[in-house]
Amino acid sequence: MKFVIQVVSEAKVDIDGKTVGSIDKGFLVLIGIGQDDTKEVADKMVDKMTKLRIFDDENGKTNLSLADVDGGLLLVSQFTLYANCKKGNRPSFTDAGNPQMSEELYDYICDKCSDVVPKVESGKFGADMKVSLVNEGPFTIVLDSKEIM
Image (tube, rainbow, N blue to C red; front, top):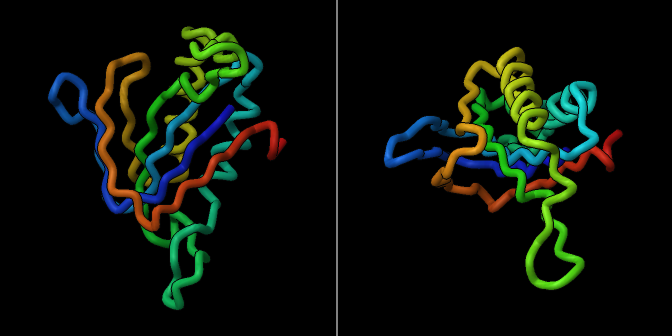
């Protein structure tokens, strides 16, 4: 499982010209789900992400968590995080989880996040989405389950 976490002052997801999710200060999280991912992997990823201390404190040091700044989450599924570009110029996505399993895990992640973060918004799994953000810093972190498990 891969999470691309971007610290934002605002972010939104539009589908067919209509905003389906938006937040102010918080994280925009692009979520890639792989073939071998499970609910246990998702639990560890959500726990790690929600506890990251990557917001500036009063001294300008990255020392505050999402809860400390009353931040929100905007969660967007993105299977292309599993692109394999080793051979040729056309990416392969065979390492991405199958759509049914991935959608179930994506929904599970959204629910788990809602248990610990008051404001959780999301895109729509499999939809053609337009994602807009104002990245603060810019500050972007990639969490890969292979590195934290």
